[in-house]
Length: 101
Image (tube, rainbow, N blue to C red; front, side, top):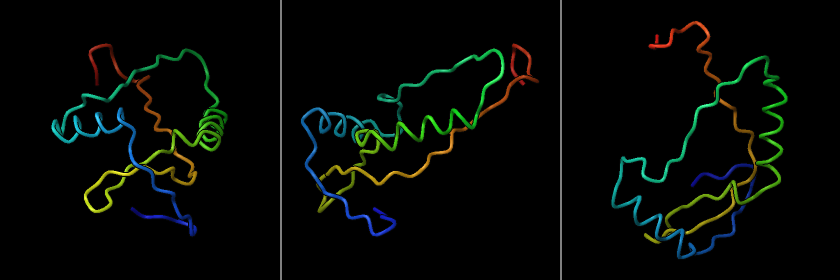
């Protein structure tokens, strides 16, 4: 666990639900069993700078979105990481066809 800017996290045990997810993730490594994703098709212009600022504002104001898990003597413990801006990856497929690249 790497902490920056002299941030000292407060470690807490996992909740029962978190521990269940942790155990499943450990048992079924290299799967996406708890990964939820989606694709957005956006028509028109997007102000990427405003979108980035919005995401950063949400992340900075909601510590639950910055929850991390680390092992302490083999036991998973949770902490809230200090806010750090998270760049939004943007993929432009405007030059592709329906079948792909």
